[in-house]
Length: 385
Image (cartoon, rainbow, N blue to C red; front, top):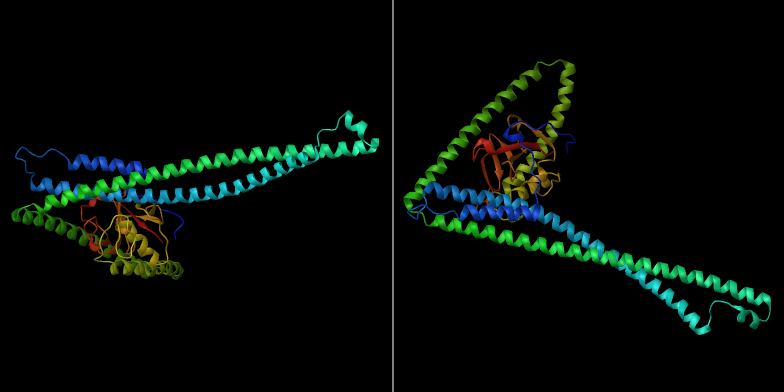
């Protein structure tokens, strides 16, 4: 995996990352969804086809963004659960030490009770058989008192530390519970809005559906045109590079050979990742899924590159920081293409302006142009290995 990253290109593709704010951010997305889906209808009570299309697209788009926030929150929840397990183990160890200190303290008290021992005084001196006996008894009691004091100190210290750990564990458990409840609420709300959008689509007339299909075809044709232009540009650049390599000196050829070996290694890994992704085509997009029966966008890219021996983080927010950022013109098969300013979608580039991705809720893993929603939404391209 590359250890250095190239600077991100300026403009839309160079937009900075937005840090996911886990459950709170997911709820914020839900609030936006509510505002979008519950907007007041037009005067005639029936939204136009364009308004329906925009509403549905916005719902799907925001739902996918919420999915990545949910994934990030789920990762954090797992870390919280591990932390709680560690705290419980620590509390158990401290409780054992506390019990041991209590037993030691009790043994001293029992010994004093059985012997009637106390601090040596004048009466003890007068009752002693000899001055030497008195001093021996006095020294013994002094040692006993010192050990008692140490046992008490140990008990108090362990008691305070154990109580602190128990309180920390209880607080972490409460935070975990609240986080899980918020995530479930966010997920249910988004799914409800998506169901409403699908119902709205199902109520369109045949004529409206035909118009909607025509709009979609226009989008696909434009995406295909841009993909063809990119493929042509990349082919021209590859040809120019090949001519440059063939005209290099012998020393240059040697250096080029090393680069070719490195490129070949990446190409081999990329081929495995693409082969895995292609085998998943037709499987459904499912919220938070990582396979093998279904995927969300980052779950698919993570699984594909894992098949090539490369470990990627779980979410788009983290995957975009792994590897080397390259320009769109320099994209190679296997590279990850990230979309939108909030980096909420990702696909695997397969060449010729095309990619394999898990598009959105209700859709299936498929091959599609990287310009499926316009060039402006492309955020960046990252070479992960």
